[in-house]
Amino acid sequence: MRAVVFEKWHTFPSLTDIERPKPGPGEVLLKVAGAGACHSDVALYKDFEEGAPGSIPPAFVLGHENSGWVEELGEGVTGVEVGGAYLVYGPVGCGRCKACSRGQDTYCENAAEMPYLGMGLGRDGGMAEYMVAPVRNLVPLGDADPVAAAPLSDAALTPYHAIKNSLPNLAGGGKYALVIGLGGLGQMAVQILKALTGATVIATDMKEDAMKRAEAAGAVVVPGGDGQVERIREITGGRGVDAAFDFVGAGPTIKTAAASMAPQSRFTVVGIAGGTFEWSFFTTPYESTVTNTYWGTIEDLHEVVAMYRAGQIKPEVELYSMDNALEAYRKLEAGELTGRAVVVPHMA
Ligand code: NAD
Ligand code: ZN
Image (cartoon, rainbow, N blue to C red; front, side, top):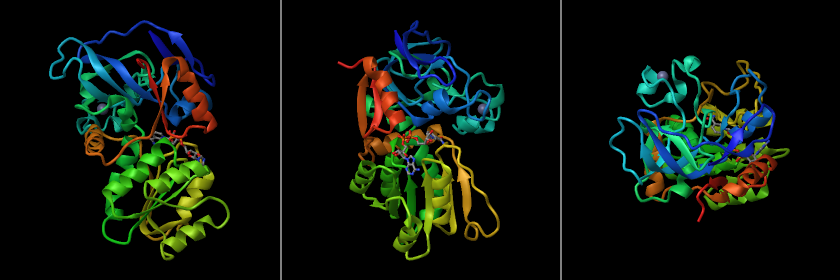
């Protein structure tokens, strides 16, 4: 079968032929419906130095944002339907520690001893015709379209988790949220904030078309450049935003968000561009929090699917056949996408 493989450090992935995997005990084989291309993949194959935090040694099949139809059950698997459509929760922890027990494999206490972080992250992922996943990682999609749903498992799950942690800051009237970086994750963040809160959503990106799409989803857009923080403050009546989300994570975006915070607000850095931030007592307003989040929980993913099925959120997707899978990554790197790129290995 064909697969997109991260083969060597600092090297663009290749489209190669590999053997179709077999499900082990407790696992299922999925016929892949959709595999989203995430900017974190670019960090993996292009940016990260070997051994640096976040780096994962090659080789493995990329794709940590997947959906598919169950094709075959491994030994001992019950309770899932062959032919049924499922979303794949990507992280794989030890399954026994406190974090894994609450469905938060991302913060597995035994991660250091695990041979991989998840599907498409050290273990073969979904940028292939077929993939194997532990049955515990399947979230049913019912009759919802699995191709368009693929981005839910990262592009929606990650902002959902960050936003859920910020809900206390956004509860009540007259609240403001700031979203920086309106790509795959940022566009979903705007939709999720509109669905879950009454906050005014302020959004920004370097790209005009990305801001237009956020505006159509109900955000107030503030272009970058000189005076951006002043304009954000003006919208909030001078007070600043109650919750900020940075889906870039570069020095300048972290600085913009930090300078836009209200007292007792929460700023979550989600993007992994590696920007740094110097802090002292007077840097941020009183009792404000600067934090980070990594992906989300299995429970969160069930909630994200419920929102999708209720029509509250809808990823905008650009579909690519397996033949064009590498073009999806080229466009992602070049910032030329206008929706989440989803590779559809079995395109009709
Ligand atoms: P993407 O390429 O789809 O979108 C990035 C967007 O940011 C683009 O629209 C781009 O124009 C914009 N941008 C870039 N630099 C900017 C700047 N200086 N100011 C304003 N806008 C800017 O990427 P994505 O797949 O949505 O991922 C976003 C980030 O989140 C990446 O760093 C990715 O690695 C990271 N990520 C983190 C997690 C996590 O769990 N923490 C999970 C998934 C992705
Ligand atoms: Zn664990």
